[in-house]
Image (cartoon, rainbow, N blue to C red; front, side, top):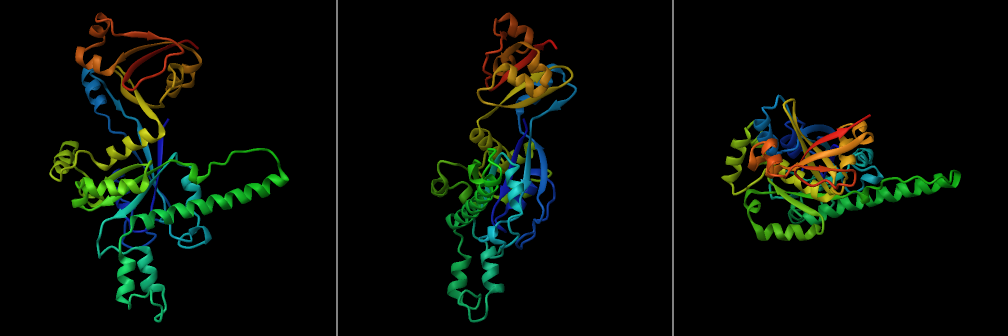
Length: 348
């Protein structure tokens, strides 16, 4: 299975900048609302150092990592469900994703406007106290408020679901057949706080932000730093991040959070032709895992020859693993574990 993450957030929170950094896709990230009209889509490999290690061990011709698909969905605003901003064009795009990544602005920058600020300064009449002519109100509008922004998005998703429920109820009066519609508020959410460089290493501030969204997963990034790393090698990225006191880039943080939230894990296959990572749900059996490679593998499943990745690396070869009695033959009821290196036996 491939992981599909929908990136949402209010305009100008750093969402498209982050998308560019995650995918190197070069999406427009201009400093004005709705720079993203249609969703940008990028498919990137899931970071997995184990594949490089196995590739050297097996002298592999090709490395095939698991992938994650990111969908940069147009900025939402208060009233989107009633036609504000881009209206509810975002709904279908979110429904197609397994998980929502909600990018939240938690940095101060007078040069980056918010949608609310733009409305107040450009759309309000001269006598409106919310206009930019009123310095007190303008300052209040410009104040960064992560909780307020989170509430706006959550409210719009709830209103969209309410509208969907009403449509389903009307439809069922004509057709009583029961069909499950995936509501937006049922989708798991990861909150990605776009913070300044200081907050990135401030555990106290991050704990405050994390508390806003518990029990959901929260990750912390600086989108501009991520953008600066575009084109760097992995080693250069790690050196660059370490200079700021950070251990992992946004992609690694987000993928880990998504795997944890969705209950996913990986198994590995290795050989001369290719080394590959496959994504499965935790609790999947050996035949179900085989089915992610090809449905014939699951249908004709006989057994799985399995060893632990750490044992394989420590001993240096499959032969040594077998001699140490650590290579196992598992049947149909075996529940896969993270780090299993597998060869499936099947007959169709």
